[in-house]
Length: 481
Image 1 (cartoon, rainbow, N blue to C red):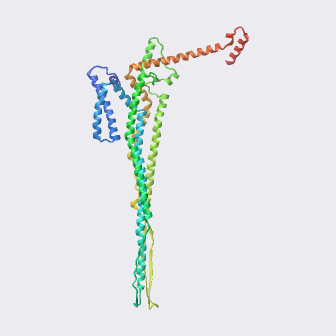
Image 2 (image 1 turned 90 degrees about the vertical axis):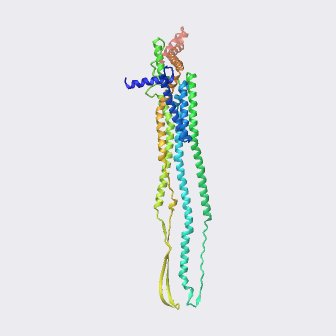
Image 3 (image 1 turned 45 degrees about the horizontal axis):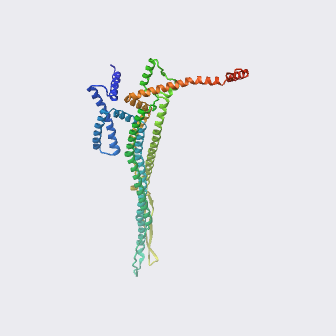
């Protein structure tokens, strides 16, 4: 037996077991239990990811809770047919708009946690580096330049105090004291205020980001799952009680019903007309109809929009990182500025103040260097694109895959629910069959009705004794022709 036929038969048996559970025998029961256990593992894996990544539980706690839920879900699926239907519809719905919204929320959370926060941290580091440099300059003003200038004054004093004694006749005892004050109180106060404001802004923004991140990681996924559950319940309810609900698909069971009608000599509708094929889609079908293409486009529009926004934040983060890093490298390479301050003095000794005796020259270098930016204050930006790109790329790939599958997920959802409720599907098939036949009969009556209207408007029908009306009506008929 070819492998393809064997797989198809095994799939048909598994599907019949899962949807009906009417096949006797302990082997069939064991196969049903294996299928239910596999689905229980799928739900357990999803729960483990949600508890570990979203809620923040440890791996051990998440594993305990997941194991208990896997056993419980397996038992419920094994004993209750409605639960099996609900579980399959839930998995299919996770791949539709509700699942798309959850993944978009997760991607937005990743961008906020990584890129937006990193961008803010780089800006915060840039502001702190500027304040740090100003504080360092304030200290350098208090030490280096003033100290050099005081040294110049003292050196001048040391060089001139030799004239304090005159011929040893008059002795002077000079006293030299230097005092200086630098008024940096206003600058210090402004720097403290600026540092306090930067700290407050940083704390407020961090709290807002933590709140948004917490909502995005915990509240929104739970709310999304709850909405998926509610929409799945309403979908089953609408399918069960409303024959018109999404009753525009020609299923394999519908084709068999129409063939039976044809064999019994009753009115049949297949094949459909060209206009009917646009409205009523045959499923399953490998080709995409116009409705399915529109559905795929509507699914992918929010995905492309959010992907563009995520790429924008990635670009802003990378651009800011590159800008700060470039400035930091230039600041590190800027050499210090040398302030030249050299003092020299020429001395000439005279005998009795008249006859030159000896002459000499002394000099002292008081030059100092001024750095434009302190190396300890140079900003060091960070880039987290590598940490955020892997989960974000995975989310985008899953969204694109779901977008390509979205055109067929509605059909799959309908096929799943119809396999669990065959009696309701028969009623819906009869309703759709009668609806199409009724529309066709109305279309056939329209030409006959229009002919009767034209015939009733002829004047010679009502006044056959007046040839004038007959000729005028014939003339009008020729003009119309």
